[in-house]
Image (cartoon, rainbow, N blue to C red):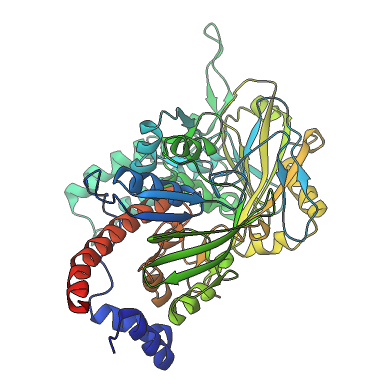
Amino acid sequence: MTITRRTMLHRIGAVGGLTAVAGAMQSMGWFGVARAASLEEMPGDLGQGRSVVVLGAGIAGLVAAFELEQRGFDVTVIEARGRVGGKAWTVRDGDRIAMQGEQDQIAHFSEGLYFNAGPARLPSFHQGILGYAKRFGVPLEVEVNSSRSAYLVAKNGNKLRMRTAINDMRGHVSELLAKAVNQGALDSALSMDEKAKLLPFLKAYGDLQGDYAFKGTTRSGFRTGPGAGVSSFETANAPVPLADLLANEQLAMMGFEDNLYMQATMFQPVGGMDQISLGIERHLKKRAVLDAEVLRIRQLESGVEIAWIDKSSGAARIMRADYCVCTIPFPVLAGIEANFAAPVASAIASVVYEDSNKVAFEAPRFWERDQIYGGLTFVGGETSLIWYPSWGLHEDRGMIVGCYSSGEPGKAFARRPMAEQIAMARAAIDSVHPGHGADCSAPLVVNWRKIPYSLGPWPNWIPGVRNRGEHPMTDTPAFRLLNQPDGRIFFASAALSQTPGWQEGALQSAHATVAALVDQMRARALAEPRVRAAAA
């Protein structure tokens, strides 16, 4: 009897579990190298005569479908939702928002307004997704990710302008360091030449006075602003005392934009984040089949079989293909009937997704009267932050996000009744912009753990362990296993990248999957003549 790779995985898994399977695959060279490399050029007729079904029309599914079509494969994309984009979801007036356990919401926005319920920004170093936007003619605009006019809000309600927190803290730290240098406290760490160069740097960096004292800076804002004539000079406010700065629980967020993923320049598609997904789908040779909910996934001896239901008509459908690229989120996939290898099924069932929430309102642009044009105010707690729109500046109305939370705060927030979530988000806005909470209308709540066909925003590959940092290195047995195909079924999604919360991760995973599928197809093509010859 021939022992196939699939049979061997079943047997190893039955004895030693998922970790044993991962170790065996690694020792036998079945685990590939890191999969962030660009997709290599391949002949346009490479996949001619072979078919692929792609499950899911998010970024990973659409990119995989497009690249496979470009290489000659016959590709069919099946999507359970009535739209493409997956978590790259832009809500517009009249759209229906369904969440498990909640009443449906209908968006009631003014003309031209929209809300990015999922991803809403694109880092400038994510050249993959930016390249697809350019390739498919999706216009981009700058997303203002940080505003020095926004606030850090302490638990006691005290507000600090971002510019004040950043520059006054810099001044205090520079003064302290200059004093330490002048008092000889760093003589063992600094040479005389280094001290001579460091002191003038600290003076400029912290805007210190001649005696290296920090007495305030106009970088933090004006006490009196410049005007006409010789009697209207700009002056600085007295510095916020160091103790008051340190007492603000949100002080660490003044470094938010230092994170490479948040650094200027950030981008957003004009008209909503879904424009990139729509741009890719428009260029597919076969448009995605929407409202098609997968009921069963079967791996056959020489292909795959997918059973699905047309939600619009209720008709049951079955399609077969040579290969399958599955981008269905793992919490959803775990509930679909499938004959995956036992270790693979176990790995899928083990993936736990995080919580993430957004609460958006339409409102007159009162924040612009406070000199805020885009960016974030950090309020902490279960609502976490306020996100201001950076498109439609100076128009009458805009969309303001009163909550964007994840992790433990997000989990607690999502457990609250929807009316309470709305009230908390409105109260957060009112605490920063007194009297304007009442101006916020047309509330809309998105709890991603309750969104059908998603059931979460991104995975936590180590269940029970939170706050591992924004992008902790992921290398668990389940992660390794699901980054490999199960026979003719390949998995792809941002969840299988090192940046699971970004569309770039979905694109990288799709590229790696296309390469892996082509490798397997070539290997099968070499083996099949030998098999046929032996059978003859």
